[in-house]
Length: 187
Image (cartoon, rainbow, N blue to C red):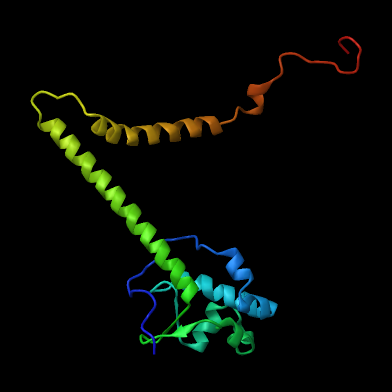
């Protein structure tokens, strides 16, 4: 039996979107050979597995799979096609290699983003602490100014975007001049 395809704590339950490699999906054997009900069950299981623990896995339990696939009473008929490509692993769960691949990529992006955000926050905290501790504020370096103002600039841009999205109401747009296109004057 195969070891699980992702680590046990890979949690994407806070990820509302799952990437789909469209060309890869539409040219897969499962998609090309399955009936409509089988495709629906397969796709639903892929999507459900995204928010399972660990991500990319499903329980190896036909009753649960019938519910998760939304196939209900059709589960026995669609089971083989819907589970094509899934691998039972040593932890007793089913894993889909493509979903696991996408889950690992998403997890790595999340870790990189969190790490960058934490480093930025630490750098800003240290800079602010130095500013508070300095008897005389030394001239700012380009990096310090850039780090500090990057957050201000992002907030300022969001405020501009919000202001730009506000549209005047009908009462505010009363025409000041009526133009007659019929050729007559002032009708």
